[in-house]
Image (cartoon, rainbow, N blue to C red; front, side):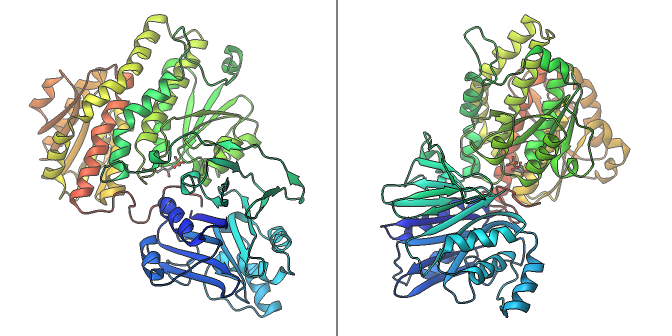
Length: 610
Ligand code: F6R
């Protein structure tokens, strides 16, 4: 889980690469490096532990110039973050440099062979250096050939960019299971882990497939398959704006993205309705017969996307009466789940590159399931490997903590559930119309809700010194409480824990003591009384309770210490509203604690390792 970028053209590669790396920093940020192939000075490699800013400062006094180069921002897997382990790595003679995102699984045996047979000395603990040295050993004047030969020997996942000082006009790149795109510019060509890294320079993109090798020069890009046969690829034209990936005046991407939720939801819903108000699933062919043929739905995802999956289960079971299992991707793939051709497998992923989700998807496909993915990043691996894709139209999400991707994932899951229910004749016109009308006005309600940011800020000021926070809820509220808790812990580093409110008394209530903060979601009319009892339970252990309730349900004020009200809406859809104050609460608490909100420690935006 790292970011790579590369350039060959007639501009100074140094500036393009540093700029691209800054936009990729969300993919990993424990060290960064750059390699420039200079015909006179040879291969110039500079790398530094820490953020891109460290690297930039490190090279600021140097007048580096080259028209070809590669860069890397790292999230450590093999070897601690350090200058030595940072990429690029170089071949034994220092003439070839390589950047890599992914993991070379058989690096130990290759390393042994390189040491014993070729006397190669290694300077880092990384798997990447092994691949670099291997290419160096196989190099006989043709970088493309050496890369092909080396890739034949490696197992694992990779997106790589390689340059050689002896071929200063050629950049070779390759991918397997890690993202890689090629950008076609006016003044040269680019490689990158994702589109925003190079959008400033080009809008025409090639999406590189697994097991492909790309050879780039200033004026030409050739793609080859694993058998070295040329591949023709359609150009993908990027229509969205580079500004969408900038902060636009907000202090952090996370806050900007929280505020983009009304628009994201609007885009995700409105594009999915035909003239008669019926849901259209982007041409996905799910007829009544196909839906009735499914005897099970599996929803598989990780982290926040998994939390969206829990609401997906609720929606599909409620509206379409199909049994749904939700699983964490890293668990699903290793437990030999019962999946066959009567299974609809739904993968949810913002990035579309999460390795565990991708592996689970492949497993389900192998067993014959129909794979439908709910993905934000167009052209990502999950999207490409699915039978059908239902995109969330959240736009690029840069902050590590997911916000707008989550709410648009929820919308997609509601739409899928309602669509299936409708096809099966289970959702009558009146219920359907009420839900659909509500989905259409949710963005407006959210805009009103976002204006109460001050209230959340005041609550954050009251609680930002907390050491332990509990989140409780019932029904859909319990799923939202998981998400609220994850948001808080990942960006503020406060120990927080979420649990279904009814389960509290079976053990966890032992942890509730004087002044423990309990955030109680009480938005479900049908479960309101039960939640009031749960609030009483923790209050009688002297907890401080912050309740989230629907406007008008003021009886909660008699039990809770603080209440934050969300607009009225049907029980089924409250997660779209109730999660937002929890996102803001986490944001302001993290800010008051001085945390690095967009790049929390130990995390990365896209988890492309197991
Ligand atoms: C938390 C967060 C993660 C991701 C998870 C899956 O805020 O963002 O928990 O949800 O890593 O990522 P995607 O959705 O890209 O598969």
